[in-house]
Amino acid sequence: MSDTETKLVEELVTANRILANEGIIDVFGHISVRSARHPQEFLLSCSRSPQAVTARDIMRYRLDGSPVTKTKERHYAERVIHAGILEARPDVHSVCHTHSDGILPFAASGELIRPVIHAGTVFWDGVGWFEEYDREGNLLVASASEGKALASSLGSRRAVLLKNHGCVVVGKSLPGAVLAAIHLDQNARIQLETMRLGKTLFIGSEQGRRGGAVFDLPLSLERAWGYW
Image (cartoon, rainbow, N blue to C red; front, side, top):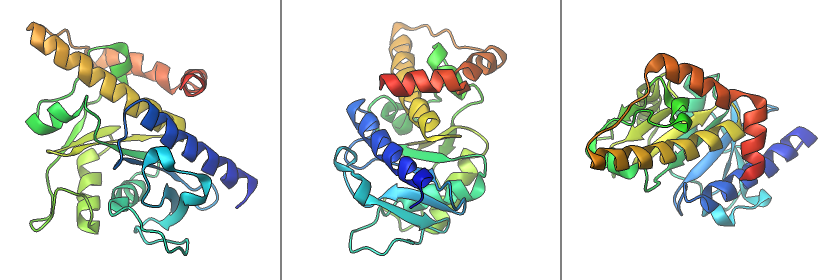
């Protein structure tokens, strides 16, 4: 790999460790990044628990989900999540799939996640909803058709809930996707707590748009990435 790709691989390994350490991606979660050298390809670990991912586990895939890297290792069945979204969204450079405890009550109920804290304004334009699993499927997004349907449910947003399963968040960069995944879980946890109190002060879309822009600033991403 080029020096640029080598650095990207190192950052992807770090992203896996950060998200595992923060309790966002569990044994079955995963995160990808679009290749800097070939935008029609992406980097993703082979089927490995996030805390165990190393540089040698990072594989290269095409946007149809087929592997470029020749390996005897198993691939994530849900790599079509990354392929479908990266193909549909040229503006997206990183995709993260999680089953974090904070978002699962919303995925299991259909209740909308809405911004209630500043960190949640990253999602000022809403969180999508996906339930178009294949008829003979198993609640995994494992087929090309499911990957494309999920990308459609995401639309132009930064996150989508998967019914009875988890969520997907995206970013314009790898640090951006990590930040979004952590902030979505944090907002969901606080929202659920306020719902128990019987009163929730939601943040309006315009104020949310202005608030969310703060987290796209390079200085904000650098500060957050360094902290995690």
